[in-house]
Image (tube, helix red, strand yellow):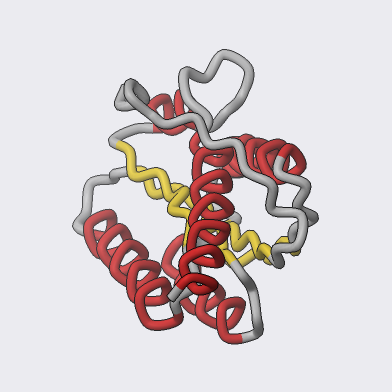
Length: 158
């Protein structure tokens, strides 16, 4: 697991407009990611808007619309599990590049909670479910809120 060395992010995002865009594939994993993001956002005093899209490939367009509509931060949640075809590589690349592009073009932080795993067990281990070693939904939400707060401070001083 890569969770060693993760920062502790405790921020107050009570005035932030946060949109969670979440894929629908792999229901059990997605339920865990969404629950983790919800816990982290509640701890940061954020009431998010949740938008569901079919899969991880569709996350960038939903994130772009949310950013252009005035979101202060977007949390993107999805899971892509390797199969026997190059589909995995294409979807992972498209989701990663697309979400990065949204953040850079709009200046709206996008918390990256897209799991890219070799098998379902690796996804479950990162989904924030009981028994999971990591909670990537919570981490993505915390990162998005912390970055939005940092950018707000930066914009106020520049």
